[in-house]
Image 1: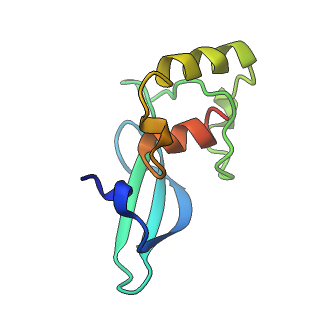
Image 2: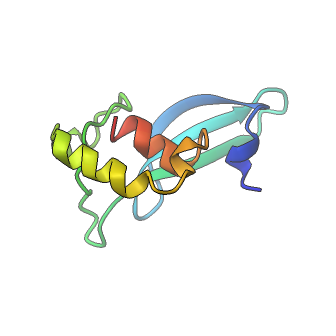
Length: 104
C-alpha cells in the first residue's frame, strides 16, 4: 500500500517547489497527532530541468505558470492519455495532484 492511499490521519499543509531532481512540486502533509511529515512529489521536469507544459498551474505558487498553455485541446489529450488508468482517481496520489492542479 502506498502511503497516499491511507492519509486519513494526515492533513494537507501546503505546496512547495520540489527538492527532487525531476519534479515540479511537493505536496506536504502532517500527521494530525504525531506531527510526522509526508511529501508527495508531482509534475515532471525534462532531463535538462525544463518543465513540461501544463494546462494551468493552480497550486498558488506560480513557479511554472510560464509553461501554462490554457489549450483545451492539449488538456483533452492529456486527460485521454492519463485517464486510461485510474491513478488520478486515488486522492493524494501524484497523478491526482497533476490532474487537479496542473491539468484542471
